[in-house]
Length: 343
Image (cartoon, rainbow, N blue to C red; front, side, top):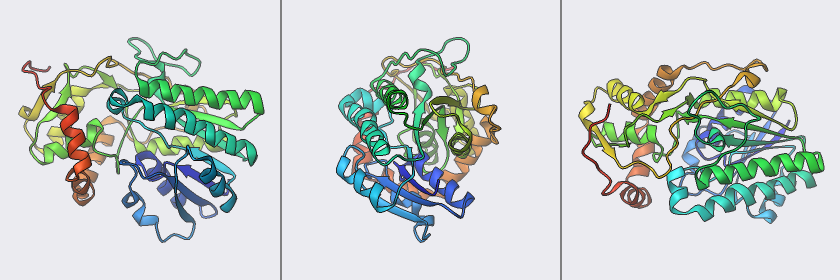
């Protein structure tokens, strides 16, 4: 792997992956291919912009001509596909864009990978394709039980990858990650919303009773896991990637407030998301057998994330003060406040 195309590389996890790869290896070139939608931000890559091994192409993964041009120009031998519509709430509002990007866009990339006979195609997926897991833990061979347009679109992309492995021998691997937190996460997801709202002494909109359980993983651990699968993973295989520890959203919320020295009175219960999954839980023994393990536990991950947002107000303030974000926030949360207390 010498010339890596990182689609969606200006987004949250993608940009952290770019930082990891350029910092870890001196003999690779990283080409970020990103449409720069609302969640794509070149500020995420400012610290590597002057690196001669870094290149940026603005483009849509659904645009086969543009993808083909990038593949040829940079002699791409590896694709890591982070490009996706990712927010469940937005998928409930506008599901069509998720199908277009997460399914059709994946198909376009797979066709390019097949045409140029690349060394590896890696798909970034999510634990949400398994659906809610009330007991036990999901393993990679479990059936898919998607419950939102987002998770259904991601599952469609996964299945297309596996079909190309079986039908065409394409060298595919997939990772299904848990909820990531850390630097550069667009403040529509729960952790950056709660941190930045708390810093401004604004209410923290907590869904329902706050007892939904999630596995919150620090993004750098996730990126290290992706790199492990790229280098050691078996072709045609899926690897779960999380911490193996679940936490309720109310516990997360109270920890954020505690770290910031803010009162729990800022918690504002709101009506729950339709079809909100109660619990995700991953069995990660398969990737651990490759020698990977997390460096951050839950508390350390949240603390590091809080510190980053405190230290980088200019980054998130620019986003939250923008019209697009304010219109989304109003549409998402206005009129959903409820009076009941949370645990």
